[in-house]
Image (cartoon, rainbow, N blue to C red):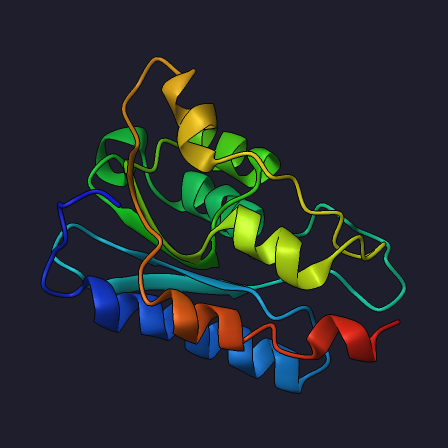
Length: 165
């Protein structure tokens, strides 16, 4: 984990957990993300958009948030922002975060741990590819902090995927 923790990181990450928890309670996949400015002020939040009919399997919370953020703010502003997310962004989401220009990501559960927890579930065929690997291939820096509060993040997934089999 990177050592560049900010005073509001745990508070904001728990806000992402709250978004995931609310989504789970509504029957959606238990993932959540929030975007904060450089001072830790909440700008937007996003739950997972995957629906029960599976019409948009790309509607991950991070990708949806990155798309919304790129429409709302310019790259210079987003470079100073942090996307907080309950689970490490997959390769697709990391690409969206990169293209949006968001400069920092803080996540709870690693992709590797998520894959071990969910198994080969058809609704979540997790890629075990660290987001830092995707960001490192880019031309602009994206700071990565995580895993952070991983036990809390992992608890969001407990028994969810087994109940959907």
